[in-house]
Image 1 (tube, rainbow, N blue to C red):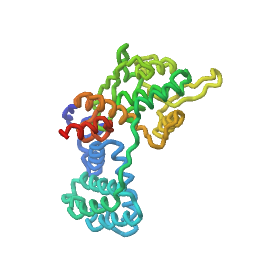
Image 2 (spheres, rainbow, N blue to C red):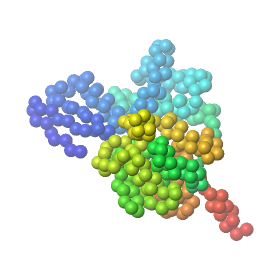
Image 3 (tube, helix red, strand yellow):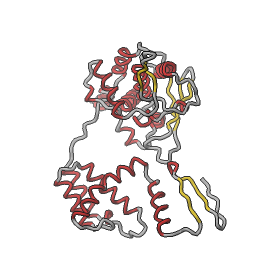
Image 4 (cartoon, rainbow, N blue to C red):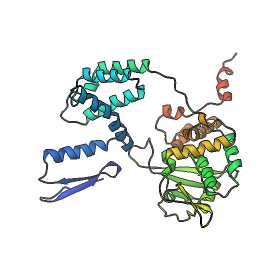
Length: 349
């Protein structure tokens, strides 16, 4: 985005990342003004969720420095290592120690007056690697949702016109078919949809891998089956009364029960992660599945696994799931037994 040069006595403004507004006034370049603008601009270099995570990770460090009369900025490598070992002795998980380390490193990187970031020292990286080995726990991934599980959920809920069940069916089928994360799903607005007989186009405004917030279109086809995501979405739009294509309200929202009509109706707001997970696990329990083995990501990984095992080309696969790397994409795929057996059965034995 361009910025016009300000004339004498005037000011100019520009919109930074994530809608950040920065105002620069000529003649007011004081130290405080400079520090304020630098803080805003450097904060925009990371996603809002990352900045929030980093700020929380440094709370304990600030308290520890105060108690031990240690300088926070800049700290020495020895003091940083002492705090990391203190966290280790307090049974902190490795993820918390790692978050603190990179939060502090980023905080120092954002300060122009710190020439040598103590977090760049090899010693601290060795300490971090040592703690990772000592605190390592095997990653237990959630199970993936299969087409059979989805069919069972739809068979149990699809015939109902109760908005709670209609919303559930639309959410799980859309998340599965479009490889959606929870935050992508709940941030879809009615105006982000383009609906056709053969398919729907969904504009994903914010995505984890879309660091510059350019957005991406995802296409989901109609399957003309009981588990058709297009049919489930159309039914939800009709019963929820979301008919206006220009409606900028969120697509999936909380519900209220109307005593006057005896039905559930949409209200303002967004569905939380906790509520979405609760609804999904209730649906799994109702069809006899162990819901604790599944998470909301099971829908994204389930759709990705089905596409991979069916042989969808990698280029289309990555574009549909909005992955930037092969490593990230492959982490979502659970290979079928048939595909895994193909390795040993094709060795000429």
